[in-house]
Image (cartoon, rainbow, N blue to C red):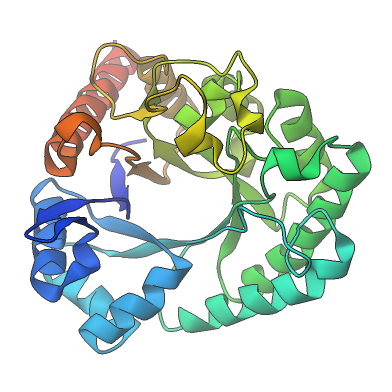
Length: 316
């Protein structure tokens, strides 16, 4: 691992005269957001599927938006993210009768970025755990069957279907993760390791990577300061925002109070020669008057120092 490719996941809130808004509030805020990321050395950008259409409207086309990124030092849009956080009668990955509808959705999204060199089609493989429980092996197998089919389609378009697991999702424990990976085809289904989400669920992301590194197509790097020991993942309707007694789950790297061992992770990446993207992500950085711009500066500084330390350790 001689160089690091840094990307940013499109979670950002900016202050405006109308209150806190996403940067897509208007073109001036959006342009400034991209310039701030560029000044920190990010060369990859990840976003949600619904933002593809929004940015296409703002910049003339999704290719026009990517060109704006490239004019400011970015390489490309690396990933597009799809999620079905709430199960419905039409979209529930653990129910086979909804698979055709979900696959049709996936095809539309894949087609929307066909002119770009997107690497990862990131999907949240399940809906909320409280809607699925009790989670059975058969449900995990049905879910795996869905993403095997989507993975085959995305591979034909040059993209990896990469599953992103939430601490509140139907597949959350290490045993469930291992089972899901056994049921899915390693040639077409990969995973994005979200460091904070796994730690909150009691899963060691470093060991998960070491055990399944060939299935790992990327990382979302953020920190947390607590493990869910009270089964808050069962909190309806939104465990991330409404868990009793939890002010916030997620923190940027570099606070000195986090539970994710980023130094161990960077050592593992260097030792295994990982050459993919490392994506910095923030959720809830605006809490307590915080600034996404400041949080991103701190996180990028910390991550780069952790990587440099890991490389120095290997050199000696």
